[in-house]
Length: 168
Image (cartoon, rainbow, N blue to C red; front, side):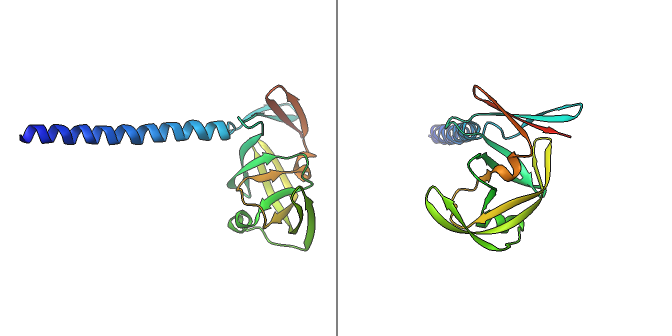
């Protein structure tokens, strides 16, 4: 009797452990499909730095980087004038709200605040003094890597790869 109930308990514990391990494994797989550039690969050459980004399963270029040495996720957006930061993320990063303005977005006009990013990194690419906007209407946590940063690098898209090259 005792060994039978112990055996059932061990089977239940094994089943629960299996479910937990599968959940962790598939969660990581899904996150890598969402952001295949969690640790962007950089190539440093004489006079330039290159970062190659793989397109995610949704067709976007999402990549991990930093703002003022704090980890963030960027969504490359050539249609955004500035780097655009959701308000709650801006607060977490300690970005200071500057003058208020209006931005015209796909969802209509929205009130924004100007700000400045002292240091932005993506792989080994480092940009300083980057113009940005704080947008309280953004619900996602990804920061739009807009033209105020992108215009400082060269872009080359081939197939499912986007290469950013910074000349030094």
